[in-house]
Amino acid sequence: MTKAPLGAPFFMGVDVLLDMGRTGTNVIGNGIATAVAAQWAGKLDGHPAPGLDPPVAERPAVASGKAPGAV
Image (cartoon, rainbow, N blue to C red; front, side, top):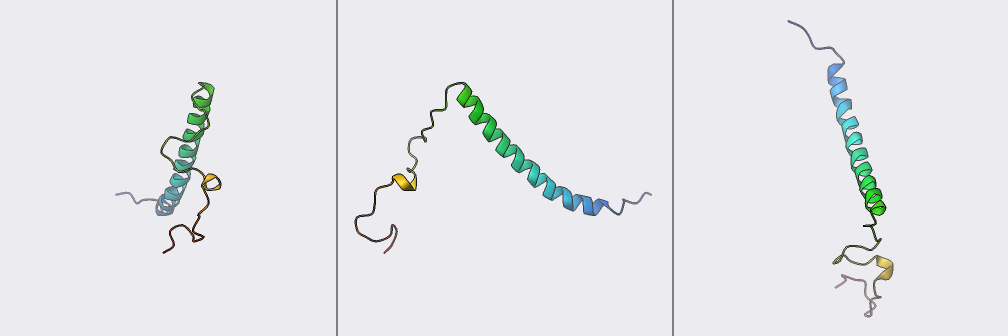
């Protein structure tokens, strides 16, 4: 019967954190690659998708003087 190395539980705990970093890197890299490929193909026009709220700076001012959502 063989025993597991003493460092195995430590490695398993650290590997979980490293895996989260690898996943985040892959998500960001895939997003950038998609944007670059779309720009290269001429499919990226820089406008938001229809149905999305405009950026805060482009929204009309509130006429009532109250903050949005205030009662």
